[in-house]
Image (cartoon, rainbow, N blue to C red; front, side):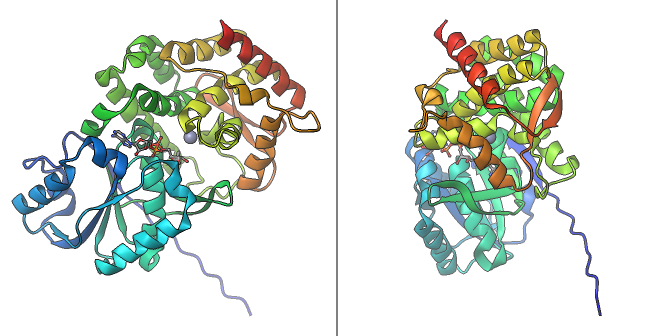
Length: 382
Ligand SMILES: NC(=O)c1ccc[n+]([C@@H]2O[C@H](COP(=O)([O-])OP(=O)(O)OC[C@H]3O[C@@H](n4cnc5c(N)ncnc54)[C@H](O)[C@@H]3O)[C@@H](O)[C@H]2O)c1
Ligand SMILES: [Zn+2]
């Protein structure tokens, strides 16, 4: 006997752009949630709390001025920011304990205000608590507003393996508040721009040349240009998840991870001293040089990619890129196997064929990586 079970579930969520969400007269949240009071718990990245110390009070004041929307169950919870939070499973238990204490249920809202690491960790807890409670993400870095925060994934690291435990769990909504960006360092801002450059190379030629033509403004952290880049990048990431045919990544191909096989490896080799976006910028440049060697793109396309990255202000070299193991093998190459293991199946790397289009390849010869690294080092030394 055999029964077949098949059903589809529709997911829908909004990514809303606003400024100063918790200003008393900002109606974004009332418009989103209506006046059907629900229990809510807030988690805030300690890095955000440090630069916006009045945020806790602003949330309470907003709630008092807009009665009947949020029933705040506990004081706002401040949690560790940055990658460290993803390395400690105990944090997940602590977050779940706070939600238990606040009697959070599936009709409640779990607000997460922070960078990509905090969104990933609290998002994971929210996904497993009661098998999933509504999470409202409020990303506070460029990277989390233009890439990680608008997607459907969360994860924590385990045993030194990045993103080993995690779920696919779409948010209830994402609220991108540009006020938070004003406190970011140039380093943090650029880190997020790398993901916008990545998605422009694989998806949108006009967007890529918009970034290229505004590279100087980007390197000066021009907020108007950055806001345009963030919204365009967020939309391209969302469109890929929605229309790419594989929202929960069942296949072996992951175009949004162009340039990431070496980036993830470099991040872990440097113990996250190199930030994700910084490593992605180097990974994009490395794969651009490799793509020329593999006859996928022209020299001039590669030059456009490298010039854009350099003009935006990215460092394209780190000494660990040429680190070798005791057998003399380049350690960064191990990133290829780890990338394949994470996705499962055959090694599949998305590579550009020109700006805006990509092709999957299944082999990356060591000699190509060696030569591309030499070129990268030479460019960075100029
Ligand atoms: N889930 C996904 O699909 C996905 C995709 C890409 C990246 N990620 C993950 O995102 C993480 C990186 O996120 P990130 O680049 O946002 O960095 P981050 O979360 O590590 O934050 C960087 C630092 O900035 C601080 N910070 C956050 N907002 C701030 C603000 N407005 N002003 C001042 N300081 C602030 C944080 O406290 C932290 O110290 C990585 O763990 C990466 O794996 C997830
Ligand atoms: Zn990335």
